[in-house]
Image 1 (tube, rainbow, N blue to C red):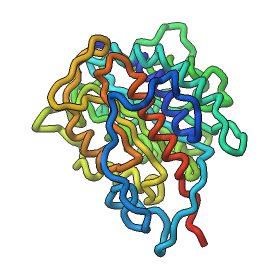
Image 2: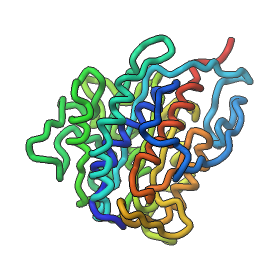
Image 3: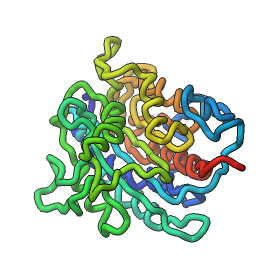
Length: 327
C-alpha cells in the first residue's frame, strides 16, 4: 500500500502486453521498450528430463525420459492480478491508459500458421479475504459510471469486440482492498477453487484450457503477505509453483508468470508510480519458476518496461510450448 491509486492504467497496459507476449513469435514490441531495463529473470532454466523442468521442483516436461515435442502455442489464458490496496491508484491509472496499445499488438498477432491468437483475459484483485480469486465481469469500483464491462462472463476473448474498453472498465478496481496483499494466493484460487465452484466458468466451460499457455501477470507495490519480516501468508511460498504445476497437468513449461513489483534492495520510489516495498517473497517465487518467470520493477515511472519484459517471457514460453512427448 505504498503508492496512491495508480493501478487501473497499469492493468490495461499490462493486459495487452502480456497477451501479445504469450502470443509467441516475433511480434514487434518496440512500442513497449526493449524489455531489458527494470526487469530481471529469476532462477535457472533447469532441464527437460521428465523431472525438474525450468528450474522448478515439481514441474515435468515429457515422460519416461522422452523429450517433449515443442510447438508454438495458439492459445493463451491470461490472468491479471491487480493490487487493489490503498496505495495503488497511480498504477491502475497507468495500466488503463496503456492497455489499448498492448491489446492491439495481441489482436494483430498471427501465429506461424497464419492464425490469430486465441486468447482469454481475466482480472482479479489481491484481496484473498473478500474476492478470493474471483474474476470480475462488471464495472470496477472506480471505473467511469458509463463504461461498458462487456459480456457477462468472467473473462474476455477476441470475439467479444471492444476487449480493450471492456477490460479497462473491469480493471479499475479501486483501492478499497485488504492491506494484506496476497496476489499469488488470489491467482491460484482463481484457477483452482473458483473453477471448482464454477465462479470462474461460463456455460459449463472452465477459464483454464488444457492446450493454452497459462500466463499470470501480477502488479503490486508490496510483497506477498505484505507484512514485512512477519508475513501473513495463506500458505508456504514454495506451494505456489507446485500449485500452478498441478493446474497445468504437472508441466511447468505450460505456464508463465510476470511479477511487476519492488525489486529491492529496500524500498524504491518513482516519480510516476510512487513507492514500492522490496518484494522478497515474490522474488523467490520467480526464481523457482525459472526461465518462464520474470520480475520487473514497478518503480520505473511507467509500466511499459515491466510489461515488455512480461511479453518477452511469455513469447519465449509460447515458442517452447510442449504439445506432447516425442514417440
